[in-house]
Image (cartoon, rainbow, N blue to C red):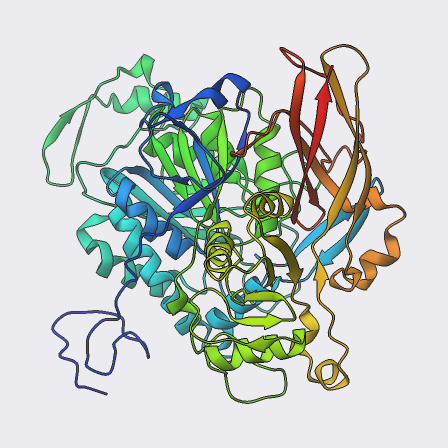
Length: 622
């Protein structure tokens, strides 16, 4: 390793510098976003035009909408890798975020595994990580082995904090939530990224919980490190503790009419004694953790109370400000931002986190329209050569070996010279999705175009994870273009050497659902769910399969787009389970159309693990 000249106080760890002694680069990418679903949006907004053309399934979000609610802004919930998502937001949102709060995980898979409830009963099961989540966990926390978690944490968080600094506005503030394991190291890192002069506060969040037997003082607090983009320009709304009789007496005794800043300059008080709401808030906050039966509890082990975020957002932003949370988890930051009238953008790699957040927002009265986005494509440089490892094998395989391995298990032969087509099975061409990224609409569209160029009419796409809102819509679109499209799940058994050796690997189609469209009277329609099928039940944990009584137990949420026009799914009616209300309606409310004629109704169902399934149905409204 090259010699590094140290000319300042800094925290150094293995891997911080490359072999030439330079800091590792932060990825600079600008990937497109695909708008998959719009929530709480009226039918009238569907008529909105863009460049004279109606939005369709393949349009990407360009970030060119207005900056205020009045100008047509929609809040955004992004599913995907937050580093790629933030780097892609830079183009439109550099210097636009007034506040960013994050609560990143530390050496734990708890943000990927979660507890889900099954059906109408109070039965809870633990869901394992998906293939993408497992890969992300392994790459972040598992590559150095036990005892080097801090090194893994720093390698993960430093590039993300660097991008967050660029996203913050000149009067913006960053709040980083940590505990005793990382607070000391992170303080050095933030000093380096933002500058020590931009340090604002180290907030101590003090809480009480059931004590555990231990030969040490009980750990009853977290740290929240606050840094500004530019100290002195940052927004700060003073908050006060409640006035007690004792504070009133002290106030009368001292008769404070002025104070001094950190440079000794006198600042006139802007409130008289009798107008004082109380003592200025200090940096130790006593806020209770969420009670087990509290309405806001979602089941996330690391969920933070809304009262904590109310204080942060209220103190460092004004109404209409843009708030960011790129480890949004169960959506506490976004929920509080919505209630306080702020704009927001949230992101998470967990599909279930996106689903929990969506339901949580829907429960807010008069929640403003928001949309669900995916990264439209992923950079292949993030998986070439390091994507796949057979269980029991020591070496990681190259991209070519990975593709050849999956194709062999599928019974297909590799093909060369194609950018998006990797193999051929009988008359069908085959595309293999990455192991660390979902198969996207953009990805399938390119493969279809290559099929058409080769005058081939059948395409099989193999994937570990799938972009939200895909399924039947892409099959319909491909059929219109003359290509028979088959979407198949790569089973987790390919990672088990014993199953591979036995030849027990099967590729299954994605889940599908069946509905009945009723027309109770003129110009009206109702949708009834009749069946939901997950072809490969082996993907479902055994303890879940044992507890499922009927097909509807798998469904947690479903919604209807009454007039789909080959564009973004717009939720026209929705039903979902909550932790308090476990029953799920299987018949929609009636919908009234303006005029008779043919319509395409699209139904989206989300299972108890957060996986999307969409199905389109043609109907004639009389």
